[in-house]
Length: 290
Picture (cartoon, rainbow, N blue to C red):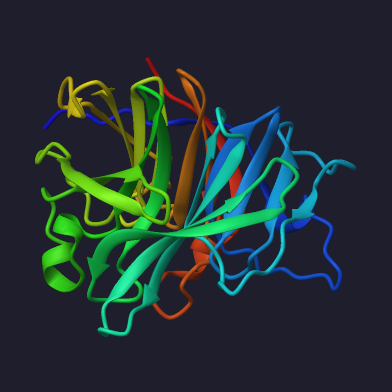
């Protein structure tokens, strides 16, 4: 089996060291990140505010929390529509009258004022195994979002943990909702047990897995919604004995073609070793080896 290259850490910081909060809190369950205007915009699955952090990962007067609570509890992803100057925030799922669950896109303007909600026309059976990331693409004056399913074949349970069934769902913006267009199948060679973050920049796609502690980079043809190749895998740095150190990666965004920023969720205390707390609830910048 070919050796998987290791990502090179550039810098990282605990989010609690970068963000002022009253009252102070050490709980920052980061779930998605966006790069914009020399800042990182971070969303959380346990709060509705959006964090803005200077890209030098230093305490800064521009760092802070923005937005407002609007009948939802946290977000799984964030993307930006530059043409409309709108932030799109992904709510993983909301229970419907039928008993099924449907995701939601919440829109904010450039000064973080709430504008509207648009439901995503796609059904899940579970409240916590829905979409984990969102990316905006504009083509032929039409707005689209690509939403990454957390489980393989967009399923929960054992079926969702079986590698080889990665899915990205494509939606077109309509007046009152996001209409499902098609499923985009990830290469079946991907060994991911789960999918926790995605970023797209000019056809270059980054997808991360929390369980596998790996990054996949592929080339995407936005004109045909297809992949150019099988892509390439990279590992997050391991310990000397090969154990996972970055076990809670939840979001990824491109900084440059060979550099990405990631955010980490809170360690699952009952399921994960205590050592993973060293890297959880943090923001990390990595270089991709060439």
